[in-house]
Image (cartoon, rainbow, N blue to C red; front, side, top):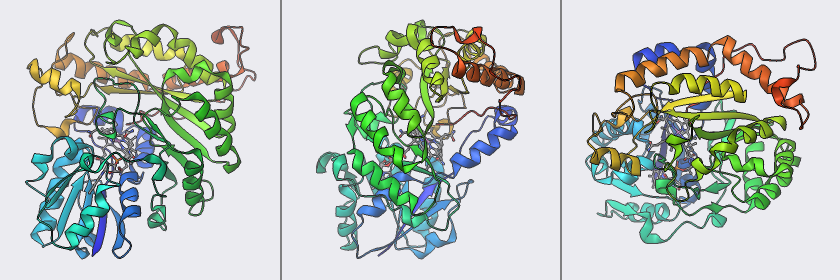
Length: 462
Ligand code: B12
């Protein structure tokens, strides 16, 4: 069979005012282009485990969700789904099937709403694909009538057996950023988190040598690639993390990852991270005040427990020359309309190099979604296209939906203004040069000249 792997690319948001305000700012558009062109790691893994007798191709849907003509040249097209583009993916599937092409669909969204996807596609996959996909491909080639494939029935994916994703299929495309996974899952269970729902609550680390092997494969395509680790929480195991950094260092790549504030507990780790090319860590700080954090992480109340020390943690990380992209969720239970000013002040106090603000989003399959549905607080149930992190689709506890919307417009304008961004970045450079025993803001930058890049900061949508 000719098998096409179709990734839905681009970022999504609907609120016209926010689009106008935030997402069209010059810096934002620039960053959007960068991340929107990230390839789909999940599909590259599936291509790698596809039995070799089948021909495989990788392509991407346009930003408007339309499939490229090459898709019509395949016998079977595999599509991955996020909730925000589920309807677009179904529309693509409907068009392909009208032309007699078989369609398989998997990924985060259909894993939690398989019955919905069965209306549009031939084969639906629940869960991680690496074990189930090659078996299904053989069955499909033999004309199976089985339409629903649940990965759980075939055992968990042992991440130490993962092959090199088929990065080679990207050759000739203009990617400069590549995703690599070092681990899957997260030991924490935040009630809003949509990714751990599927990749499993068990935290699994890959052998460091395999991560290096994958990056070497990327280095064959690009001399100086930027690596985005597509992890949920990279440095849970500090000793393993140090070994990862040691082995990354000779590769001389720049990298970015998502982690939690506990990286700041280990100075040696931070030193090794910086030395190995870490440019930025994205950390979910979620709220400037402790009350809304209470109960947010369901296993150990991790976020609330760490609230008091998070300011020190961010400063410690940034002093190592690793920028922090601090993420805040707006509209959490316990937040009132003063949260917008609080986030603005807090981001300034922390001198966060980058800040991401998103709206609390009830993704299907999350404890948050089930709770809000039970409480009658979802405004438009089933409107998955609103699962963008920028659109309000629920009734917040401490404000009205309009106050939340207005608040995010207000905050976007201020947080991403050139002045505010410059101030934060100047603070970052001050921290970088500050001595450990002095508070960061008590020192002047080393040179009179500002080394702050003159561009707006960018809200990263991940
Ligand atoms: C990299 C990334 C992106 C890249 C995606 C590149 C791409 N083309 O895929 C970019 C930057 C473009 C992006 C954009 C968005 N993202 Co994003 N992103 C991620 C991130 C950080 C990693 C995803 C990843 O690579 N995972 C690793 C791979 C191996 O896993 P996987 O893709 O799930 O694939 C496995 C299985 O799902 C399954 N599978 C997947 N597809 C298929 C298909 C078949 C046929 C089969 C058999 C199996 C199968 O098998 C794979 C291997 O095991 C996650 C967070 C996270 N840590 O997961 C958020 C995440 C996926 N993003 C999210 C969101 C909300 C978005 C946006 C809507 C943001 C926005 N406003 O625009 C957009 C949507 C883009 C779109 N076009 O739909 C949410 C999605 C939640 C949800 N339920 O939908 C996540 C979970 C983050 C979060 N905040 O919660 N994102």
